[in-house]
Image 1 (tube, rainbow, N blue to C red):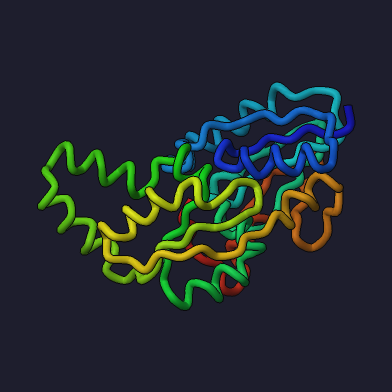
Image 2: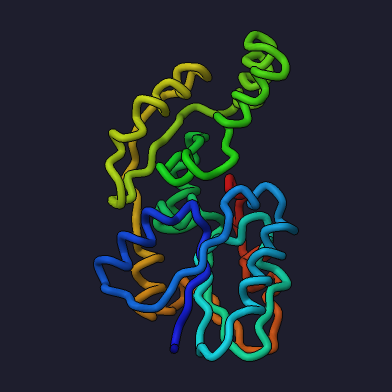
Length: 227
């Protein structure tokens, strides 16, 4: 087998869409989405998958740097390849530059995968309501989100935004955020599976650990990841 992919479950809709379109035959190993909240656990889970992989040339990681959770990953026998983006939101939007441009209006983002699989702001808010009550929780979250203006649904093309708009509209209304759909992109996922590993990707040779330069932490304008 030449390639294998390890991907975040948040990207399942988009990855399956591209796999079907390109008729990709090699497997994808999925990593639990909720681990993003603890980068050390996410790193450990990805490394565990890497350590079990044998007899391939390339391991394609479909993750953003996600709180530097990729830093320190290593394969002794196989190249590791991953997109150079800050997080999965940047990947869905076509890159860090477009996310920075959109974030001139501070925004919170959802895809169907992020809404269904991640420990996101809405699931955390519901937990807070159960624990502290609606009035106190709403006050806490309005303060947390006071600098945000928009709640944006990313139309990646892998699902119909209307499927989640009722719920994301409810979330936007609860926190007094402007609700809109923005155009997404599957560029990075298509390029990953087509082996178009250009300047948008990092290639780490066998025996070398992914370091902070690889994930772009020293690149000018590197941002904070939502995921």
